[in-house]
Length: 113
Length: 114
Image 1 (cartoon, chains in turn cyan, orange):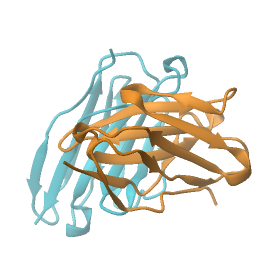
Image 2: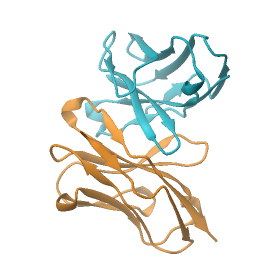
Image 3: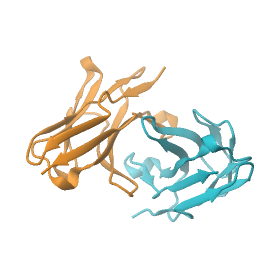
């Protein structure tokens, strides 16, 4: 089974800090995604990547950036954390051969104070 | 614009009762359709998916869903709910040529009464 590991389950950061959320997969999936999950809003796509060093904006990229230097790792960066970025962040992977189901990580609950 | 709507934010059913969770989508062509479940404190797990063919699809945990093109709907059903089904359920749509990018609904939280 594909495993998607998010490095932190809970994080508390201060306003203005630069925050790194890490996601690592142990299979050779080309596509990786970052979503944020908020009550009543479901999951909203922040950024995704089709391959190393490739990235595309999702629906809500403002205030975020991403890095994909290696195929297995996809990092989400909050350049200057703000309180409205307090949320659950979910990483997911997908490959065309995976019968079209995402594999999700367990999530990182980020609180910005 | 592409969108997914789950009209019910919260549903409560009695254990043993039947369940139907609604999902409506707006898309330019026939999309790929999914239902995911998120138990408290857990990640999202795929329940079932529809790509093509038979419009009634079976999933895990006794769930099924029916694709109705005329109604742009993909409702999730279960004939008899168990207390362990209490969770949040998400409907999602996507297209293969968009590299797996999915659009999710707002989610429906299911509570189960004993």
